[in-house]
Image (cartoon, rainbow, N blue to C red):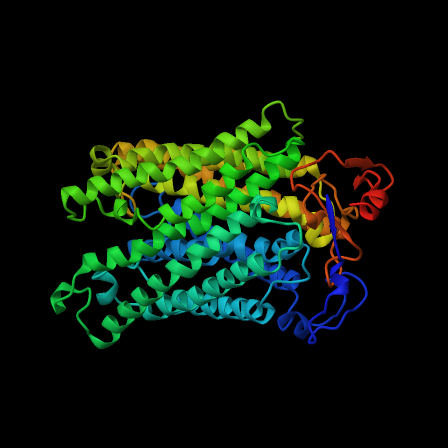
Length: 563
């Protein structure tokens, strides 16, 4: 056990002098938020923008599912349907899932977990948020101009020849890439340069390992997507023959470029989610994490493997037999570090003192849903079955179990877990759990039926379908409505806590990482007084404080004076 000096003893940004009170009220006014350098405020602004994107993408999803309630036209034309599922995919992927946990929750908790006053490059952090907003506005502006119908993957040659504001959407995604790169650079530098004395690599919280591995992928993979979209814009605007075979181009080249980024991007989405679950499983089981180093190394292994498996998206695109066999084998290999994490989470919970608080309920839902998503991925990694399942609803279900059942559920788990630290308010555990159960049931109703219809041959993205698939679509649509109800309950619980929730103690869950030594919500410079640095998963020194209605360190003064 060691102590580190308070961040109040370190310089504060000249642009933001110290004010009393917490970060929410130290300065008022829209301008003070828009141009803040405080990582906490930037995280909250990211959170607001990302939640709005989530709402928008969710509305598109409900409209798509409503249209598919019956064969033929239900509420819209085939052209409108194509635009809606494209916008749903683009908004959810580029505006919610990819930035959700790193940009919002990561921005808030990373410096706190390091015992630091901010990220290493606060101005770059602010620039990344402003760039995100510009990219989002460009992408969403396409809705007002009629939308696009290319699908969120922008496959050529269709995307170079169809009508609609394709250039505007792809330009928006291009701009969003810079936000992702800047965030990744900032996290790498912060973790390298701002770890306190005594916090070596293997005393970092696993959330930091996950964000570090994610940042590596962001910095290395995102430029590939940016260049690919620039080439697409150039071909569409100037008629250059890069991807369009009519102009002497190769459409398969676009797929290689796109998936070389987009499969690593899957792990930009899922690695932070895994970091959240590693924190929650240990804290809410009151037990030291099992296999700390294995989980830490598996995050780096996933980052490395993610660059080697893009070809499994292209088994039916005309690759050589040798290439598809190699990509199939590599795809099976990448499941190993993910399985290591799941095994260690289950081992951590074994004989633990599990408390079914709302964050933990979401964490348990994540393990179940991500497990289904991972296991069904094995069918798509197998050559013989992928040929049949490719471009069917089986792929839709697998992707959503991984990305929505994984990332969205982990995002909600992390949001509930750090909500008392974000806003200093406690929420209703009962209604939080009700929302979690509704989300879990609604999600499974929505997407499990899609495994069945996909295995029976129902293609994805089709506006119409034979009558024998109607019952599966009806179950899926009913489930989407229930999922929406659960999400609105979850949102209502959090909004109610802001209006009428009890004030949160510094450490409501009994966490041992440094963010729980800050006030709830934190002061402007995060900490006030020396910090006790222990193993991030050692709960032995924490006791319940009835007066504070939270956890505190036993004999804290003695430990601080005699580390």
